[in-house]
Image (cartoon, chains in turn blue, cyan):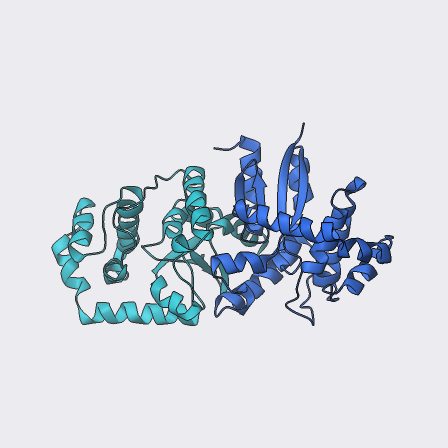
Length: 200
Length: 200
């Protein structure tokens, strides 16, 4: 059975978006399965006492520069969306509505939502936005809106966020390899060594 | 003329200490000269509004685990000093007292101070501590204490910290390659690519 690499992200996080450029390559190199998990950084930031990085003095300016440099390094388009920051609750509900479907539909939608927001600057905060992006990749957008609104979908997101918090997930991206956490896009090279060596 | 790689660190920062394991290898691979610069994170944290990472909920526990994992990865001993955190003003004054001496004496002292504190857990916050560590590597500890107390040494540290803040240095380690800033021990692999490619 292949190992599982849990990939935690928040749809409003540009570093989470950039991680999508390298996660599959890492997993394939080490015969891992990627388990995508949407998280809500707003909940995590209440626990850690942090404010959004891009709004912090000095650190925000550095992060903006680092993001652009990393996007070129990783080969992904990156724009500054007109609507920022956004609430990622609707996108995360849509993701978990599809999470147990076959064929990685939730991950397929997640890539489209990330691309729409961070690659092309389209708002993805409202259910209609989600339906539009779902339709763009051949899904039934109206059906998805209905599934997003179901009590069990809303409950699923709450449970996933609670579980992530219990695991100590406070950032985007964060990766969980058999309980070993790695934080940030800068960890890809170390994770590659970790998986190759079987830990150290 | 070789390129200069500015290496900013705070003596109280374990990640700054760990960076000393890889900085020379990176520089040698790309024919760079390393310019060590002590910084005071306390000043930077006033500007950024941050508290010490190791004291932050969730993030602190992650960082402690990450530090131990990284120390094993980088091949450096790492202990939890009994006295923590410490003020790094005295150590930084000692560093700048020697900065313009020949033969890299300041960097030699910096390595000893980092090793004493993070590798073996000895306090390095008081002038007598600095003198003890200087003597351990064959320097005149009493003479160093006298140089640390000189008005020009104190002024030098103030100017260096002001200059670092103007450059946007808020973390330890941070690296400045021709004005391009990189933050964190996790940046070594990206800096290696950056220097090999001549930027991107």
